[in-house]
Amino acid sequence: MRSVVGGILVLMLAACGDGGRDGCHGAASLSPAITSTIVALGAGGDLVGRTPWCASDAPVVGSLLDLDAEALVMANPCVIVVQPPAQGIDGSLEQVAARMGASIHAWPLATLSDIRVMVRELPAALEPGNDQLVARANDLLAAMDRACAPLPWDPSRTVLLVQAGDGRLVFGPQTYLGEFLSACRVPNALAAGAWQTLGMEDMVTIKPAVVVMVGSAPSPWTQELARRTGAVIVNVDDDALLVPSGTLGASLERVRAALANVGSAQ
Image (tube, rainbow, N blue to C red; front, side):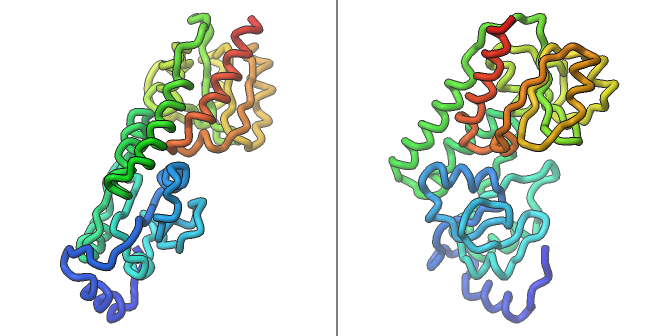
Protein backbone atom coordinates (compact mmCIF):
# COMPACT_ATOMS: atom_id res chain seq x y z
CA MET A 1 0.00 0.00 0.00
CA ARG A 2 1.27 3.48 -0.81
CA SER A 3 2.32 5.74 2.00
CA VAL A 4 -0.11 8.62 2.47
CA VAL A 5 0.36 12.15 3.77
CA GLY A 6 -0.29 11.32 7.41
CA GLY A 7 -2.29 14.30 8.65
CA ILE A 8 -4.63 14.37 5.65
CA LEU A 9 -5.51 10.68 5.82
CA VAL A 10 -6.00 10.72 9.59
CA LEU A 11 -8.40 13.66 9.34
CA MET A 12 -10.33 12.09 6.47
CA LEU A 13 -10.65 8.74 8.22
CA ALA A 14 -11.80 10.47 11.37
CA ALA A 15 -14.45 12.32 9.37
CA CYS A 16 -15.75 9.00 8.10
CA GLY A 17 -16.41 7.89 11.68
CA ASP A 18 -15.93 4.48 13.21
CA GLY A 19 -17.87 2.12 10.98
CA GLY A 20 -20.65 4.55 10.00
CA ARG A 21 -21.92 4.64 6.40
CA ASP A 22 -23.30 8.21 6.35
CA GLY A 23 -22.20 10.08 3.25
CA CYS A 24 -20.75 7.05 1.44
CA HIS A 25 -21.81 6.27 -2.10
CA GLY A 26 -21.27 3.62 -4.74
CA ALA A 27 -18.61 0.94 -5.00
CA ALA A 28 -14.86 0.76 -5.49
CA SER A 29 -13.69 -2.21 -7.53
CA LEU A 30 -10.15 -3.56 -7.15
CA SER A 31 -10.71 -6.22 -9.83
CA PRO A 32 -11.00 -5.67 -13.61
CA ALA A 33 -13.14 -8.84 -13.81
CA ILE A 34 -15.62 -7.59 -11.23
CA THR A 35 -15.64 -4.15 -12.84
CA SER A 36 -16.56 -5.73 -16.19
CA THR A 37 -19.39 -7.59 -14.47
CA ILE A 38 -20.68 -4.43 -12.79
CA VAL A 39 -20.73 -2.64 -16.15
CA ALA A 40 -22.50 -5.61 -17.77
CA LEU A 41 -25.15 -5.45 -15.04
CA GLY A 42 -25.82 -1.86 -16.06
CA ALA A 43 -24.45 -0.56 -12.77
CA GLY A 44 -21.33 1.15 -14.09
CA GLY A 45 -22.62 4.42 -12.68
CA ASP A 46 -22.24 2.96 -9.19
CA LEU A 47 -18.46 2.81 -9.57
CA VAL A 48 -16.60 5.51 -7.66
CA GLY A 49 -13.17 3.83 -7.71
CA ARG A 50 -11.23 1.33 -9.81
CA THR A 51 -7.83 -0.11 -10.69
CA PRO A 52 -5.74 1.33 -13.55
CA TRP A 53 -6.73 -1.71 -15.67
CA CYS A 54 -10.50 -1.52 -15.23
CA ALA A 55 -12.68 -0.49 -18.18
CA SER A 56 -14.41 2.39 -16.40
CA ASP A 57 -14.23 6.17 -16.12
CA ALA A 58 -14.28 6.06 -12.31
CA PRO A 59 -11.27 7.53 -10.46
CA VAL A 60 -8.28 5.22 -10.00
CA VAL A 61 -7.78 4.13 -6.38
CA GLY A 62 -4.95 1.69 -7.04
CA SER A 63 -5.02 -2.08 -6.78
CA LEU A 64 -4.68 -4.81 -4.19
CA LEU A 65 -0.91 -4.68 -4.71
CA ASP A 66 -0.61 -0.90 -4.82
CA LEU A 67 -3.57 0.67 -3.06
CA ASP A 68 -3.83 4.46 -2.97
CA ALA A 69 -5.50 4.80 0.44
CA GLU A 70 -5.94 8.55 0.10
CA ALA A 71 -7.77 8.18 -3.24
CA LEU A 72 -9.94 5.41 -1.76
CA VAL A 73 -10.91 7.58 1.21
CA MET A 74 -11.67 10.49 -1.14
CA ALA A 75 -13.96 8.22 -3.18
CA ASN A 76 -15.74 7.18 0.05
CA PRO A 77 -17.42 4.03 -1.32
CA CYS A 78 -20.05 2.16 0.65
CA VAL A 79 -18.75 -1.10 -0.84
CA ILE A 80 -15.32 -2.36 -1.90
CA VAL A 81 -15.28 -5.40 -4.19
CA VAL A 82 -12.11 -7.45 -4.64
CA GLN A 83 -10.72 -10.60 -6.22
CA PRO A 84 -8.39 -11.71 -3.42
CA PRO A 85 -5.11 -13.58 -3.93
CA ALA A 86 -4.55 -16.99 -2.35
CA GLN A 87 -3.01 -15.40 0.76
CA GLY A 88 -6.14 -13.35 1.40
CA ILE A 89 -6.96 -9.66 1.64
CA ASP A 90 -4.27 -7.29 2.87
CA GLY A 91 -4.91 -6.18 6.45
CA SER A 92 -4.25 -2.55 5.54
CA LEU A 93 -7.21 -2.54 3.16
CA GLU A 94 -9.41 -4.08 5.83
CA GLN A 95 -8.29 -1.42 8.30
CA VAL A 96 -9.04 1.47 5.95
CA ALA A 97 -12.41 -0.06 5.01
CA ALA A 98 -13.34 -0.50 8.67
CA ARG A 99 -12.52 3.12 9.51
CA MET A 100 -14.56 4.31 6.50
CA GLY A 101 -17.46 2.03 7.35
CA ALA A 102 -17.21 0.36 3.91
CA SER A 103 -18.03 -3.32 3.52
CA ILE A 104 -15.67 -5.60 1.58
CA HIS A 105 -17.04 -8.28 -0.72
CA ALA A 106 -14.48 -10.79 -2.03
CA TRP A 107 -14.70 -13.51 -4.68
CA PRO A 108 -11.65 -15.60 -5.77
CA LEU A 109 -12.91 -16.16 -9.37
CA ALA A 110 -10.73 -19.20 -10.04
CA THR A 111 -13.59 -21.45 -11.19
CA LEU A 112 -16.91 -21.10 -12.96
CA SER A 113 -18.60 -21.76 -9.63
CA ASP A 114 -16.73 -18.77 -8.15
CA ILE A 115 -17.79 -16.57 -11.06
CA ARG A 116 -21.43 -17.65 -10.76
CA VAL A 117 -21.44 -16.86 -7.03
CA MET A 118 -20.00 -13.40 -7.74
CA VAL A 119 -22.66 -12.67 -10.38
CA ARG A 120 -25.46 -13.82 -8.08
CA GLU A 121 -24.23 -11.82 -5.09
CA LEU A 122 -23.19 -8.57 -6.79
CA PRO A 123 -26.69 -7.04 -7.13
CA ALA A 124 -27.34 -7.24 -3.38
CA ALA A 125 -23.85 -5.90 -2.65
CA LEU A 126 -24.32 -2.91 -4.98
CA GLU A 127 -27.99 -2.01 -4.69
CA PRO A 128 -30.03 -4.20 -2.34
CA GLY A 129 -33.58 -4.67 -3.60
CA ASN A 130 -32.84 -3.62 -7.20
CA ASP A 131 -34.79 -6.21 -9.21
CA GLN A 132 -33.37 -4.98 -12.52
CA LEU A 133 -29.84 -5.84 -11.44
CA VAL A 134 -31.03 -9.27 -10.31
CA ALA A 135 -32.69 -9.85 -13.69
CA ARG A 136 -29.53 -8.85 -15.56
CA ALA A 137 -27.47 -11.11 -13.33
CA ASN A 138 -29.79 -13.99 -14.16
CA ASP A 139 -29.32 -13.25 -17.88
CA LEU A 140 -25.52 -13.45 -17.48
CA LEU A 141 -25.83 -16.74 -15.59
CA ALA A 142 -28.17 -18.16 -18.24
CA ALA A 143 -25.66 -17.25 -20.97
CA MET A 144 -22.95 -19.22 -19.14
CA ASP A 145 -25.31 -22.17 -18.69
CA ARG A 146 -26.11 -22.24 -22.41
CA ALA A 147 -22.43 -22.15 -23.34
CA CYS A 148 -21.69 -25.03 -20.96
CA ALA A 149 -24.28 -27.46 -22.36
CA PRO A 150 -22.86 -30.87 -23.41
CA LEU A 151 -21.33 -31.10 -26.89
CA PRO A 152 -21.24 -34.21 -29.07
CA TRP A 153 -17.56 -35.16 -28.90
CA ASP A 154 -15.32 -38.18 -29.41
CA PRO A 155 -13.95 -38.81 -25.88
CA SER A 156 -10.67 -40.13 -27.32
CA ARG A 157 -9.84 -36.65 -28.64
CA THR A 158 -8.34 -34.50 -25.90
CA VAL A 159 -8.23 -30.70 -25.96
CA LEU A 160 -5.49 -28.43 -24.64
CA LEU A 161 -6.54 -24.87 -23.74
CA VAL A 162 -3.57 -22.49 -23.91
CA GLN A 163 -3.33 -18.75 -23.36
CA ALA A 164 -2.13 -17.18 -26.60
CA GLY A 165 1.40 -15.77 -26.59
CA ASP A 166 4.84 -17.10 -25.73
CA GLY A 167 4.08 -18.09 -22.12
CA ARG A 168 2.31 -21.40 -22.88
CA LEU A 169 0.06 -21.07 -19.86
CA VAL A 170 -2.39 -23.98 -19.96
CA PHE A 171 -5.82 -24.19 -18.32
CA GLY A 172 -6.15 -27.37 -16.27
CA PRO A 173 -9.41 -28.98 -15.08
CA GLN A 174 -9.50 -26.85 -11.92
CA THR A 175 -9.78 -23.53 -13.78
CA TYR A 176 -12.86 -21.78 -15.11
CA LEU A 177 -12.05 -22.77 -18.71
CA GLY A 178 -11.23 -26.30 -17.58
CA GLU A 179 -14.63 -26.50 -15.92
CA PHE A 180 -16.19 -25.29 -19.16
CA LEU A 181 -14.60 -28.19 -21.05
CA SER A 182 -15.82 -30.65 -18.44
CA ALA A 183 -19.38 -29.28 -18.58
CA CYS A 184 -19.31 -29.64 -22.38
CA ARG A 185 -18.08 -33.24 -21.90
CA VAL A 186 -14.89 -32.52 -23.82
CA PRO A 187 -11.79 -34.19 -22.26
CA ASN A 188 -9.02 -31.89 -21.11
CA ALA A 189 -5.55 -32.98 -22.23
CA LEU A 190 -4.36 -32.11 -18.71
CA ALA A 191 -5.58 -34.77 -16.31
CA ALA A 192 -5.40 -32.62 -13.16
CA GLY A 193 -4.41 -29.29 -11.70
CA ALA A 194 -5.16 -25.65 -12.35
CA TRP A 195 -2.91 -23.35 -14.40
CA GLN A 196 0.35 -24.83 -15.62
CA THR A 197 3.17 -23.57 -17.81
CA LEU A 198 4.23 -26.25 -20.29
CA GLY A 199 7.28 -26.46 -22.51
CA MET A 200 7.14 -27.73 -26.06
CA GLU A 201 8.32 -31.21 -25.06
CA ASP A 202 5.64 -31.38 -22.36
CA MET A 203 2.94 -30.64 -24.92
CA VAL A 204 4.36 -33.11 -27.40
CA THR A 205 4.27 -35.78 -24.68
CA ILE A 206 0.65 -34.96 -23.86
CA LYS A 207 -0.15 -35.09 -27.59
CA PRO A 208 -3.54 -33.34 -27.64
CA ALA A 209 -5.84 -33.86 -30.59
CA VAL A 210 -6.93 -30.20 -30.52
CA VAL A 211 -5.15 -27.13 -29.18
CA VAL A 212 -7.34 -24.09 -28.53
CA MET A 213 -5.37 -20.85 -28.38
CA VAL A 214 -7.23 -18.36 -26.20
CA GLY A 215 -6.62 -14.65 -26.74
CA SER A 216 -5.20 -12.36 -29.39
CA ALA A 217 -1.43 -12.53 -28.78
CA PRO A 218 0.70 -14.13 -31.54
CA SER A 219 1.81 -17.71 -30.88
CA PRO A 220 4.34 -18.71 -33.57
CA TRP A 221 5.27 -21.97 -31.76
CA THR A 222 1.91 -23.56 -32.60
CA GLN A 223 3.10 -24.54 -36.08
CA GLU A 224 5.85 -26.68 -34.59
CA LEU A 225 3.40 -28.26 -32.15
CA ALA A 226 0.99 -29.10 -34.95
CA ARG A 227 3.80 -30.62 -37.02
CA ARG A 228 5.06 -32.78 -34.15
CA THR A 229 1.72 -33.96 -32.77
CA GLY A 230 -0.75 -33.67 -35.64
CA ALA A 231 -2.95 -31.51 -33.40
CA VAL A 232 -5.59 -29.26 -34.91
CA ILE A 233 -4.85 -25.67 -33.87
CA VAL A 234 -7.89 -23.51 -33.19
CA ASN A 235 -7.57 -19.78 -32.52
CA VAL A 236 -10.26 -18.03 -30.46
CA ASP A 237 -9.21 -14.39 -30.70
CA ASP A 238 -11.10 -13.13 -27.63
CA ASP A 239 -9.14 -11.62 -24.74
CA ALA A 240 -12.31 -11.52 -22.63
CA LEU A 241 -11.76 -15.25 -22.08
CA LEU A 242 -8.69 -14.34 -20.01
CA VAL A 243 -10.78 -12.24 -17.60
CA PRO A 244 -13.01 -14.36 -15.32
CA SER A 245 -15.96 -11.96 -15.35
CA GLY A 246 -19.69 -12.44 -15.47
CA THR A 247 -19.63 -11.68 -19.20
CA LEU A 248 -17.94 -15.01 -19.99
CA GLY A 249 -21.08 -16.53 -21.50
CA ALA A 250 -20.69 -14.85 -24.91
CA SER A 251 -16.97 -15.63 -25.05
CA LEU A 252 -17.49 -19.27 -24.07
CA GLU A 253 -19.99 -19.53 -26.91
CA ARG A 254 -17.14 -18.66 -29.28
CA VAL A 255 -15.01 -21.48 -27.89
CA ARG A 256 -18.01 -23.79 -28.08
CA ALA A 257 -18.60 -22.88 -31.74
CA ALA A 258 -14.93 -23.46 -32.56
CA LEU A 259 -14.99 -26.88 -30.90
CA ALA A 260 -18.25 -27.77 -32.68
CA ASN A 261 -16.64 -26.91 -36.03
CA VAL A 262 -13.65 -29.10 -35.27
CA GLY A 263 -15.88 -31.94 -34.12
CA SER A 264 -18.10 -31.80 -37.16
CA ALA A 265 -15.07 -31.87 -39.45
CA GLN A 266 -14.01 -35.29 -38.17
